Image (tube, rainbow, N blue to C red; front, side):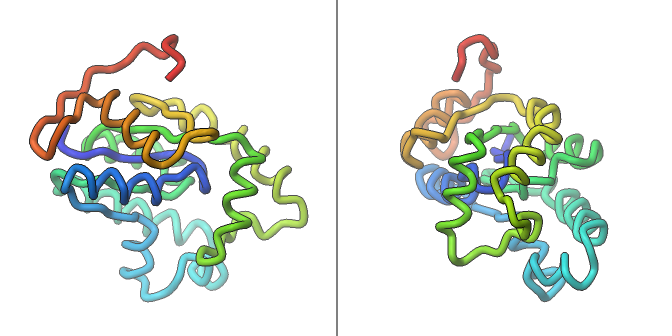
Amino acid sequence: MRNIVLVGFMGAGKTTVGRLLAKQLEWNFIDLDKEIEAACGMAVSRIFAEHGEAFFRQRESEAIKRLRQCTHTVISTGGGAVLRDENIDDLRKCGILVRLEAHPEVIVNRVENDQHVTRPLLNQPDRLQTVTTLLAQRQDRYKLADVSVDTNNNTPDEVVQKIKSLCHIHDRKSFRFQPVPVWLGV
């Protein structure tokens, strides 16, 4: 495997952790939502408003296909990138899938404090209920990741260290993934 692909719900820490991990490894960093915004010439919130979620998901699948040529890259996906089987297959071809997990209350707190990002799917009166429902709907998809890291009570640095440990990454060139049994509760 030549890349690390971060998956998980919005607000789980994929972008923050991804940037930090890439910096420490001296790898490239790609934020999939930013790639889609660049390709469409507009923000994700505007894509959803003007073209709808189906249009966005199609652009997302196209962007994921282009990622297969990357090496030594940390890729932060959008929370719904795992909804399509073809995306899961293409992301697996990119690299190792690392799921970042967080409780619904933590997610709501994080996204409410993030003034720079608009979350179109959370434009609902009861954000906690929306997050809880969406998480439940996507849970089986997120479980398809190779490893999971809990981000609830960990700093981004701690999450990065856990990812590096789970993936046996010590520097820019050493990368040997060996799956960790789920029962370890990582």
